[in-house]
Amino acid sequence: MKKNIIILITFAICLTFSNAQTLDRSIQPKPAPANEIQIKDAQTFTLDNGLKVFVVADHKLPQIYFSFRFDFDTKTYGEKAGIPDIFSEVAGKATTSKTKSEINKSFDLIGANFGFSNESGFVSGLSKYRSKMIELFADVLLNPVFTEEELDLAKNQTVSALAYISMDAGQMMKIVSQVLMNGKNHPHGEMFTATTVKNITVDDMNEYYKTFIAPNKTRLVIVGDITLAEAKAEVEKHFKNWEKREVPEYKYEQPKAPDKVRVAFVHKEGAAQSEVNICYPVDYKFYNEDYFKANLMTYILGGGASGRLFQNLRETHSYTYGCYNELEASDVIGYYAASASVRNDVTDSAIQQILFEMQRIIDTAVSEQDLASAKAFAMGSFGRSLQQPGTIANFAVAIDKYNLPADYFKNYLKQIEAITVKDIKEAAEKYIHPKSAWIIVVGDKKYANTLKQYAADGKIEFYDLYGNSTNESAESCDCTVYYLAGAIVVLFIIFVLMKRSAAKRKRR
Image (cartoon, rainbow, N blue to C red; front, side, top):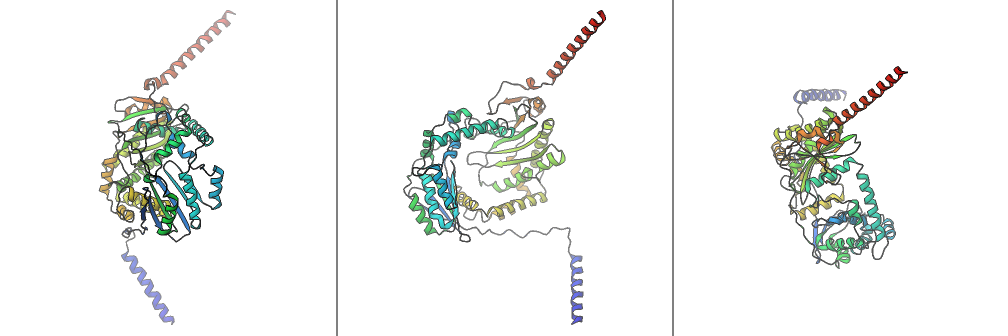
């Protein structure tokens, strides 16, 4: 027995040394091919009023999630800009049969969460309360009451938030960027002010609801512990009498990126840092043919702490705590933005490095290692998102709304895995435009003149918080000469007074 054990140990040692001699640990093992993800297909039906319903049955947990998505064109509101935002604040607060406190208490009693905005609504909780949950939400959705009290509260809160925004350079940057990229006559560029918010009335809330919230423009996704038959019964019971209506469509001229680089500056008194944003509108739609490779390209350029922008501006140059970018898709018009908060004295240098990295990803192919890391991040993020019922609901809506293949998201990992270095370069060439962009800075105007070098026409354009052009010029904002002249005058006056004082002492 003892002899057999010794033989086995000797064999194991020999096998270990044999493997050590043939295994090259410097070579990273190749990942296994991506598999199709097991995502449950949605079963669908449509009510006579046009309400589309998608049911994703999942009986692993006794939970249920109802998600309503309203699908209609956005519009501008002029002197009453802000109506959609105010509607989101007052929607779901009261119905013809329940007060605000009664609604909240009813949902609390069954441990349900709910929300309602101008774009969507949801309710979730234990599946044994599904009938009560959908009954309560149907009341909120179909029988809303908009009160003066709730409207005044929402308006006052919004006006207070606007006052805060005027003190926050980052928020100022977001507003000005949207205005300059899209124009004030476009829904994405129209910004509300304290004046426009105060113009909004209860009648406007009722009109908004009657105009846009319609069953034929709504998708209802149900995810969780329910069968198709049970879902049909609940939906027909509560929503079959919801009246279909014509919803208007709105079309606007598409915003365009500037032909050449334009530099815009917004002065913020006493700003300790500069908020920098290099941005432009771009025709980038959800789930287009470039969607996956464009997302990976953006991640490599500046999607996180490993992104090139972050590594350059923070790790190499210590200009900022972080620099990131985003390529935002939209049904109307998307945009690209690379932004950072930097020290005032390095504003021009930070802009130079951002532009450098934007151009570099166009000119030079990324490494296989960078691509592999980006793929790993994308795959991991996708896998984690599948734990949320809202993600499954998003998939069901996207497949229907954008006419995607039924297995589109099941093959998500395969689509990511198939992306090549060449694909990343093509995406960069298509969506990264450092030579036709807005360079927008919110900060102390005494640093504005250092940015002239980036403007194609050599001029700095000045704007206020709401993207209104001001009468300032870069010359008027270069205060150094004036400070120096003032100091010379003060010193001269002191010199004269000292001479006079000395002369008086001599006469005495």
